[in-house]
Image 1 (cartoon, rainbow, N blue to C red):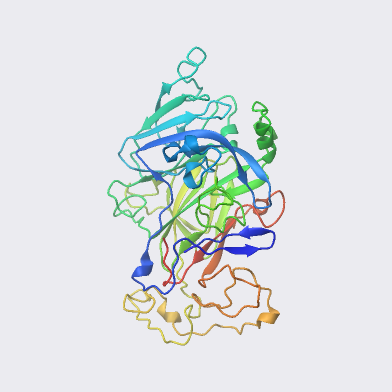
Image 2 (cartoon, one colour):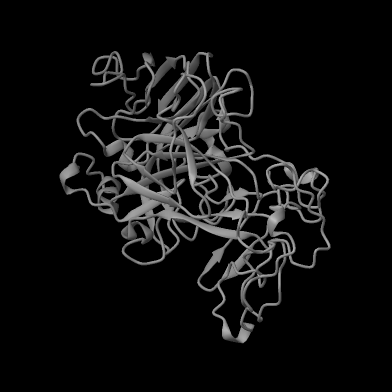
Amino acid sequence: MNVTYKQPGRLLGVILTGLALALTWGQATAQHDIRGITGPTFNLYAFPFNINLPEGSSLHMWGFGDQDAGANATHDAGSGYNLPQYPGPTLVVTAGETVTINLTNSGVPQPVSIVVTGHQVTSSCTNSVTPILSPDCAGLVTQAAEVGEEVQYTFTPTEPGTYIYHSLDGSNPGLHVEMGLLGVLIVRPSDASRTAYGNGTGTDYEQEFLSLLTEVDPDIHLQMERGHDTHFTNSDRFAKVWFVNGRVFPDLFQGDYNALFPHQPYESLAQSHPGDRVLVRQVNAGQDSHPFHFHGENLRFIGRDGRRLSSDGFVADLGRSDNTINSAPKQTIDAIWTWTGKDLGWDIYGHDTSHVCNPGPDGFADASSTYPGEYCPDHGKPFPVTLPGAQDLALGGWWSGSPFLGDTGDLPPGEGGLNPFGGYFLVWHSHAEKELTTYDIFPGGSLGAVVVLPPSVDIQ
């Protein structure tokens, strides 16, 4: 179900993909996986393109696209994942299988390569259009493809986890990441379990969310668009736009592919039910550090840079609990986030006690209850304050009109409308104030959120 709303000056399409009302609890336990393309063989291409920003400007980028999806026919047309995109396609593989990436440079004016963090990658030049000048797709770090050339990269990931792949130009370190030639590699455990690191490691989850942080200096992109691809030094770089999954606020509150920004297809709004274990794959693919803060509950760290935080080499038991991930450049963090509503002091489902809450040994409602996972000691407790009337409130677009989960109260005409399922929106955002702006205008940048949805609403 796609729900689209309009706001003055811009179409703000809030797409909560696949959500449906009036489902039973058994139907509403659908699990969400990170979008991507599955291997073990990938055919990528690199091509210049422009992305749209919400205030109406655009940025010239270099990006990866999925060649198998019709890349050669859709450089300037098409939709979805056929186009070059920012960030590049998320590559999903299984531990132990040999991965092959065939990369073609279809128009980036510099030699493009693939480097995968945490892995030893071998490369070979499979197609060279300039055999005299570049007989082996030469590059300083690894083999790189000039326009029209193809390089094949192979490696075998042995450890499940979250990794970064990106292009690296030896003569201008950082330029290719700045321009968008980057993406995420997810290595799933070989036992096919719904865990980050395998059965028995304490890393199981219901929902999965990618949070990929990047930043850009628009002045550099303008120089590249003008063809000045040698006019780059890190000393002059100063970021002015901050992204989560290739988007900035308010576009972070979107579902998957949206016609407003076809080159930025990845969703940025995390979704959860009360009690769901959400695996957050936090990735800093940029060049600056980012303190990213999670409201609602602390996260429990389970892995860093594709290695579980373990005292015995198996169970992920060494990670700390924190509400902020201080992301270093090129670092990945895997963490579990869970919101239960425990100890709020009032019943999040309403205080009329018409619903049943049979507590299990941990105090949470068992499967025989109306809302399994409800915190029973708060069952039936009224909301602790009297809310003022609507005429005395400044209403945000995501206010449902009610403090109760799944309830939508009365709102004045023209107010609200962005929370059709009565969910709780909790802000996930950078703790660096400047990163909440776009071109120094607030709100913008990496101002995102998670929505806790009622149990009756499906997540797909």
